[in-house]
Image 1 (cartoon, rainbow, N blue to C red):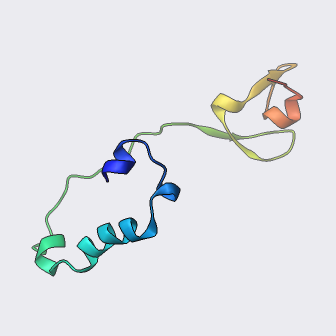
Image 2: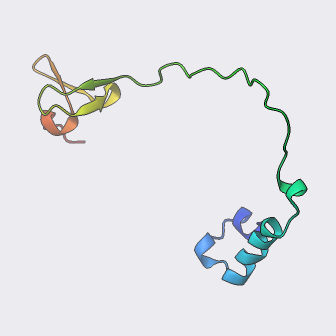
Length: 85
């Protein structure tokens, strides 16, 4: 964990060191890693719509509105609009 926090990529950490951490969880008693109790309501509700989608009239693909381009008054996906970034 210290190496990952220091920015060392996981692929550069020796497997033996990785398995030490896995072993901590794998070998732990159930009580140490699980909380078992009655089910309680969480107050969860679906998120508000974040991004709208629409169908590109050029190709029929579903496209997120931020990726639509207006070409001659028509909203098209990037591929159909011939838009180049």
